[in-house]
Image (cartoon, rainbow over all chains, first blue to last red):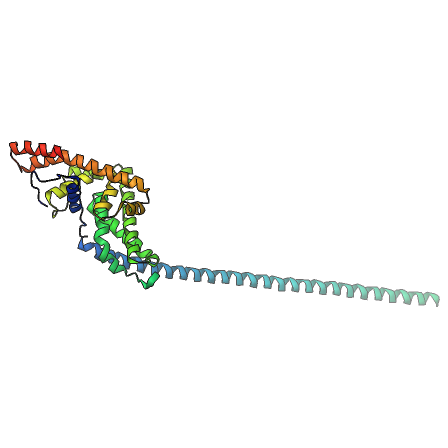
Length: 121
Length: 190
């Protein structure tokens, strides 16, 4: 609506009508949709990349945890075996010591018995 | 998605980009910022596309988010100490659409000097042709408040138009001195 002196806003209704015309929707810049779709593609690609990275990280974390747990279990198992071996060695040592003592006592007993017999004769 | 309605993002952009862009532009007065806001609004729509129940729901959602985003942008600018409308005033309406009629462009400029809630109500009323009830729902405000904003906004805009129109007439040299006197009388009368 061109400006015509003396014809504008004669009533509230006319003012509202002029305002309605002044506030008609403006066409969006043609580049807006193009940029928007481009940005959307970028974000979607980023989302896919992030999801992939998340899965990769989770898999790596899982693998690392499994490796650590396995290592710990193997280490514990090895320790238990070594401990058993040490226990067995100690038992053998005690048994050897007992055998030596027993043999020494038997020998001493035999010698004492022989001396007793010689004395009686 | 209810009633078999399928949200097509590209179609929604085609249908509503001018609405979202115009709302943002009229609320912020900054074309560049309005483009950014429109882009953000549609990207948010993309994230929430699955929640849209119908075309009307998407339209309502877009309007609401566009208004909220524009208000947020205005507040951020204010916090940073920049008054957008002072910038517009200083550039003598450089951002007003070149296709608009001189009077329409002037009115549009004057609208931007109104307080933000009144501007929001008027933009939704006269750009989007919404009823006060619909505006209240869109802005999540009480109906009485919206009606008051509409009434006061319209009154203030007419008062501003009354003052500024005289300057406009003088600047454009549309009337002679005698005519201007007549014009003033008529303008004062409305």
